[in-house]
Length: 254
Image 1: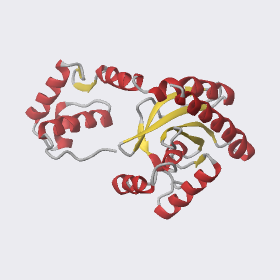
Image 2 (image 1 turned 180 degrees about the vertical axis):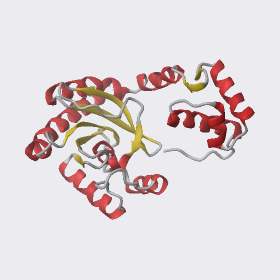
Image 3 (image 1 turned 135 degrees about the vertical axis):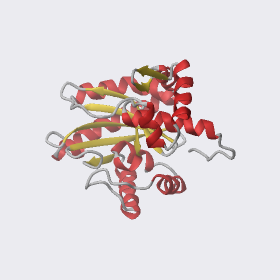
Image 4 (image 1 turned 90 degrees about the vertical axis):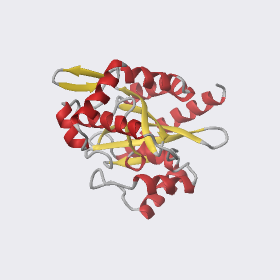
């Protein structure tokens, strides 16, 4: 989990703010960024020009957008993870067996980060992608991870990121979340019943090491019309837990 810098560098913080604004706006002009970030135009232009030199920003006149240099860094970071290499084929198999969207997530800085997804032949299009970050409490993947973190770590995550409502079904109460996590530990899988996206259900299972440390989670997501009754509560959970178990065994021998 992240720690606050003792001596933060103001210029670096400004650069990060510029990049975040570009991402949120899907590209922007200098004047737009300056107004949103309450910086003068010359400062914003200097940051963008520096980033452009190193390939982190591209100038499609009149707008700037994020460059693919970030993909190089993200791809490298993912490539260095044993979890990704071991779990990737299981995610692919899970998508093929269920016909739905299968995903792999890990936790970083108190957020869930998607490492890989695979679309089955009936999978619906979702807004997630490799590198997509979201609160842990809104997904089955995230709740599977939270359920196997120490209580103190869960408290720190909630204190830092809160329990914002993404849909009317999102769990936003600490006591209710605690009850959900206890249920996850008891049955070995987590459910997301339209808690991140209306009309979507998800089943997630934790991936733990042989010393009970949680390193990620694997899931299957699908529309409520198909993810219902025994398929949602028994069939898909059995498949997801089986995939997680295979990953755990392979991680032990890595």
